[in-house]
Length: 238
Length: 238
DNA sequence: ACACGGACCAAATACAGATTGGTGCAGACC
DNA sequence: GGTCTGCACCAATCTGTATTTGGTCCGTGT
Image 1 (cartoon, each protein chain N blue to C red):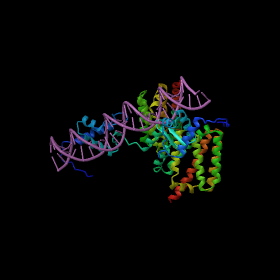
Image 2: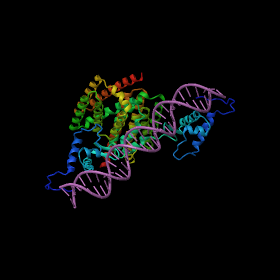
Image 3: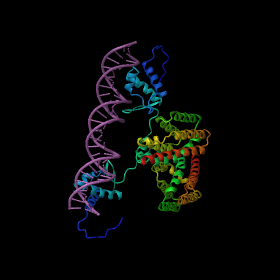
Image 4: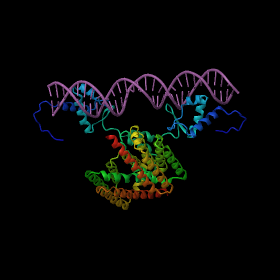
């Protein structure tokens, strides 16, 4: 990507004219309520331009995240829908915390392993940032959120669509309100320090491209979480 | 619901004759491998009975949970599919074989481990039966189906709803027609013998309650599958 | 180099026709 | 009267065809 300095171009390129026209159409939302744009061929004739120019403009808008396209379907305003979340919500109700925790124990070590193989330097920097914020949040409610973001980042960096979906499934269940409470009580100061330490060791292993070690520490981390959750559940039952 | 005492009814009601006939048809599984029963009209003419009698019989079998029906679709053996499968099919299109295989390599060893902890004697017997049928099917198309059934049984016996959903996700992708072909070509005689041997060792480990061993052999099994799939894909690319 | 026009492909949709389970009703047979 | 059959109709689904739509490439003109 480079900047072209203002050469004398009295006549704007046709591409830019089309881009501005469509951009205005999108931002001013004067199109059908379903967010559907006219077809590329229709836009071309309406704007008196070629289809290639229209596609160039739409490429720009898509890169900006303003619209999304699907072959055979059309072009739409906004972000593409994610079917994963719906699926997660459906089974969230019929899963108890221990089952979810067991599933995490199966999946997340594998994700950490994949993550170690594929993480770039930027990825590792992001992970460290998230771990720092988790630690900085201390005992507050925000710590839960940063911790969740850290684990989710690992899953995303692992770069496997199916595994990411499986993780999202568990993550969605974990967000259930009624047992977020229980998890919060399990967050004692001593446990918190251990969690932070484990986070750092996981990221170190990922940074060192040591997938086996990353998986192992992740397993240790989740086992710690699970036993504390177990204690909390037992205490509540009495 | 009340029991009618044995009045003298020498001639069995026609309904019962039809019921017994269809029940045998279901339990002996002599119908297509997809578990689909003939249509009600077809059953009526074949059994020389009226459609109402057939429906009465199917009502019984449905109440017993042996079959399930869907208007416009048909009558099928077994349990109705859970909503998971439909949503799994949604993301199936955007996943390639190697990604799916990588996900299997992450999830199925963990499932084998859980399975080893929870399998009953009956469960193990079922697994052995499925492995036998896979072997007996040899190089035929049916071998794929029995193999799939074996892996699915392990996932089910593992007894974790979330993990089962994750497995179903992958299984759905695997069923994609266009690369079932590729997988079939990877099924050379030598590889087949190795697969059968690995199946037996996995089940032995499960039977011995040795989760770690079951996971390890499962990993070996999937690695073998993956490398053969890789070879097949490379061959096709050229 | 840029833009237009055209052609073709693949994915998705739209539509019509056939199939299938769900339901009600009239009549035949014991 | 109860039981079973045959028939007609409905609604959901599948199948196959044609159309639409984005994705891609090529040739031409400016």
